[in-house]
Length: 264
Image: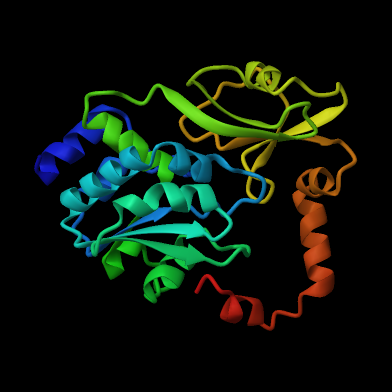
């Protein structure tokens, strides 16, 4: 199967980046790259989807990675995992070759951020304001590449795997049809108390939701239940005015945070 065919099948199946941004995957696979990275580090704390999928479906993940390499012309595939993801590492090791390798990431935040992942696994730096393909790299997460493998078998994206955690009776990772309500997903974890607040996504970048009737989409990463007085909920519910007021009291415009940020 040539690169144009792979990209076309991925587009037809409706594959988008499952990490949250939802960038059309066929566009990434239409570019020419030197390295394809599988981002299995999961930057967001509490979410376990990618590590568990890698452990359960190693052969399909390798197939998705290989197809992505064929489409982009890449000669090297790197699977970025954290050392504590032992089950995923053991499951993938039999499939490793000179061209397909595992790179162990530190168990720190923001390891798993796209730019940080590229730097830690390849030593290459994405210049500020640029994108990974400009340094010869394409990055996709585990669930995205599993969907690539399915797409090339004629299977469209109709389900989503996500973590349900926090103050629920049975924290769980589930695979549900796209369009399933978050309320139904919550029930699969045993439900939660009436006075809880919910985050759609991870604790760092996720957003507080007000309606559990919202549907699961291709980019729904997780559902986290927390008490309404939890510091994370209080922080996310701050108004922009409040955030700016706090920032002005502590920021002296030295720009060190920008200059020293590990992302660049």
